Length: 573
Ligand code: GLN
Image 1 (tube, helix red, strand yellow):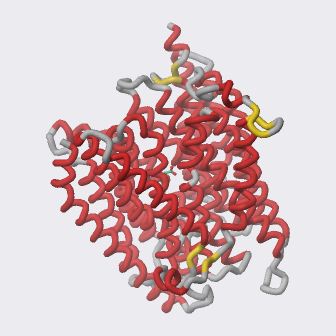
Image 2 (image 1 turned 45 degrees about the vertical axis):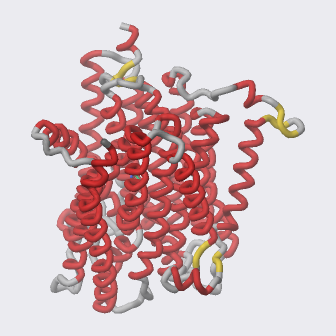
Image 3 (image 1 turned 45 degrees about the horizontal axis):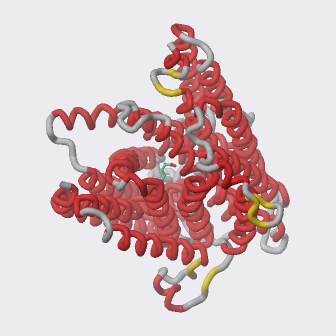
């Protein structure tokens, strides 16, 4: 009886606390991404190329810092404190963005561009990146700790958690994307901040469900005074704030070394990219040293894991185009309204109903944790059905825009997850289950194919001179099949292939590869850079050519992975 009281739907209640916290964190992160490119180019008048590169460096920073956030939590803070601190920084960052969006409303031109607002924006981006660094790796580690070593529910637990990530991403694209463009950028950014605050309150209220799994490893050491009256804990918090101020500057610094510029395809390299590259090289040096000291069997598996991690960067570089060149492509060549026949064109404003899901889902889950039996199932069923109805309303009735259509990615993840959860065991029973590296190969091939869809799209202009938005839907479907073959498989490969004592660090390495992917994505995005006033036929040509290049990148690296598969199999045996 004691165990069921601590469980909901057969999983520890702590899982749902983590699910909701990560849902809000991803809501803030992806809401931001859905808006950022359009905000930079339309509002702050950034040239396309600068917009793509800033989007890439900021998001890259957010994925590089988990390496440090994870290590600090492992050694000193513990996961719980790191999550709370990261959450606070995220709230501040989103409110900072809301301020910049509000500072100079109305039409802006180069003369009236508000420089303070731009500086606050960089500060906000740095706050968010550091906040993600403290929160994201640690909330994922807590999930792992809720289950004992051989608990068969562990994989299912991670699948539920991955759904939380994508429910957050889906709702934020729709809600922030719509509200940001319709009611003003500051509302779009601000709502993410307010909701992150709810997420944080929810985590604080639910922390007893973590049963001490996320506490600091050594409280004495953490409280010990290090520097005058300052304890280790306060030293960490203050250093993080100093880091925010430093990163605010770092995000803006470009290096003008001719050879680096040439290497990056003619656009200046940012200091952020250099810092992340240094982190990557440091990690590689450590890796070579580490694998020289372990047994041959362990070494083979660690090398395979490292190859998977490195190649995943190529996948994310393609994947992250969805927030860059795909958004610009949708904005400039499509009418993003999916179902125009349902839209009342009387100019009346409407709110996305999904906003109500933001109350319904946490409310339903939290309430369900307190009750038992049939009432609990009924409540969860109603929560699910209600959320689906709200979503359907938004897709059918609310006019879509380029930013909000990024929700398609997360939607397909949510829809495809059950299919893949069913597919892998079936293939396994038929003895056809591909190895992780083969799955990565297919993931890359599907990513390449999704760009192939857009190449066709750019050549299929309708009578109205526009491209049908259904091409975008198809491209997302194909891309997400790729994500399902790669992203969850990669997370699980980290936990199974790594030598156990460095699994936290390898998780950081996995996210660092996403960081490189983001930054590379910014660079590859510049292939599609153009003056926003470019005539549509010319724009289609530029988009089409850049998508063709990326299609070949995906196909070639996917085929390479498939060719490497037999060798990787030998290494893991
Ligand atoms: N979509 C997943 C998330 O947001 C994975 C992203 C990544 O690793 N680049 O957590």
